[in-house]
Amino acid sequence: SMIREADNDYDYLTLKVQCTPVAPLPYGAIIAGIFVTATSALIIKKRRK
Image (cartoon, rainbow, N blue to C red; front, side, top):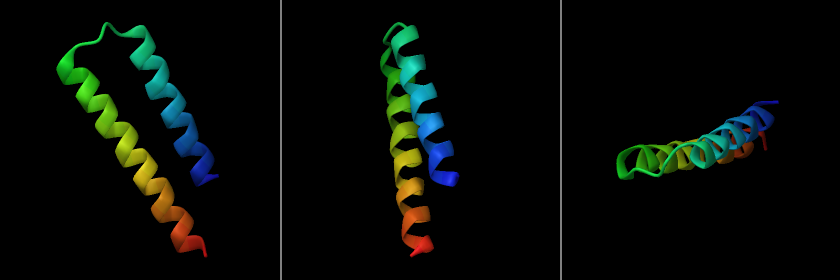
């Protein structure tokens, strides 16, 4: 369920990117957020093994 939550966050961020006019600062923050979300999802996967 944690990984599914991460996927939902990713979808939400992707939606925000599509709805927001592209500005350098918010876009960078969104990319950073996606990266952090993906990284934490990977860490959670590794801990489960």
